[in-house]
Length: 215
Image (cartoon, rainbow, N blue to C red; front, top):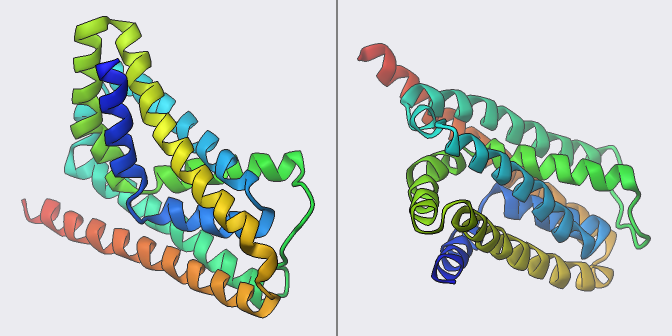
């Protein structure tokens, strides 16, 4: 249980930090309601499951290299800018509205995929898993074998589900009190935030590229 509790606490420390995934969660929660938090968490946790498997197979040493961080940063920055521009474009074209009905399966799948892409687009996400997550996971494995890895992963994603579903619930339940003009302004702001995150990743990757060329 120590492995589970430790992973849960560390998971909360990461999940509660402001970032592009939280911005995405807020945007989707305002559009489709409390269900968004669960869907975002599913996409995020599936990506983390894949990453846990890859790290266990030895990928960690490659993710920590400057070249890998640069590539992830460039691709990730482009993805975030695309999402941000798309959000603002939808507002300008009048495609944004607050849905009070349950979302369809296709929309659910889109949010799950979107959250996985948003998570993968953050180079710090991969670095954290390669530098911190891998150490915690291997410690769990050394103590309890595969059962330890399962406890570690379960505790970590429980923190994600708890946080993002809580955020989504609060926003989803209060969105009916927000008029469309305010809603559109909020979406534009959230889109701009994603663009800013993406631009930041591109700048950091550019500096890394210059460092690699000068090495």
